[in-house]
Length: 386
Image (tube, rainbow, N blue to C red; front, side, top):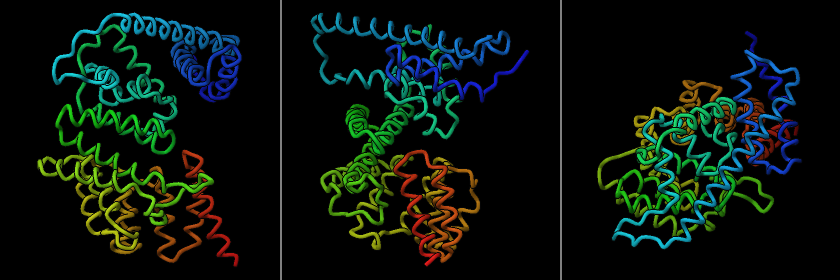
């Protein structure tokens, strides 16, 4: 038995996507078809390696694309037929958005939570495999296999058993995060669905997630400059924050916290509310923010929460304390170099900070973040030369 040359697969992928594009597939559909073909290659090639790997991938990917296109056409036809029929009269108080129902159905009980989230993000949320992989901090190939396994698991199952609320909330949060850093409509759609979910379920974590989204979305107008470069929180023009969304988010959060059943989304919303409540960056209550991060770490054990807590400790107790908290974390954690760079700069070590900003820029997953970190490194290097 031979093994699959993963380097060869990565090398061939752009060419195969380009061929499908020339045959009429849009980029997202071509990308999905090629991902399915790569998974098939991992399964087949160790036993039956083709003489022409690129030709094989093109053939299989094109077949996958056609299968998906036919399925999509059939789905649209079914939807058109359903719209042509008079709808049954709704029962009082039971109206639920069709999209929200799809979120619950994709979060099927037969799937693990991680697989359910990945499948829903791909099938309903509209995110690419690459975007989902970045959100989960795993290689794209790993995520493609996870989604493929989830599809196989539910392929022969009637989707009439809705999944759990926790999984749906996590999906909505990831969709919002993707929209918050890119597509505005995607973020607005996540807020719309979460608002419905909070009303429908009366669950404190659904309310906590809604509050978190509202508070983050309120800062969106101030997050970028006219040239699309990022503006760090401390430098944002707080006069551009949406005070109406902030007030609503705080009200929703307070009502959720009053139920005394704290969850991770409520804790994150409380941190966002403390930032929103500060008239200036200097007035931020960092001590209380550290306390909320302590709660968040207790609830989730998340390394990302620990990383953010270390930065908050650096603001509350000084950069040396922040660096000490950061030292306990895996340095390969995404955004670890950026956090370390910021704390080293505040501690008076611009040489180390400049190097770490450059490292963080190389590891950044999106262009605006990479550009911001590159400028930070260049700024410090210019100061050192001067």
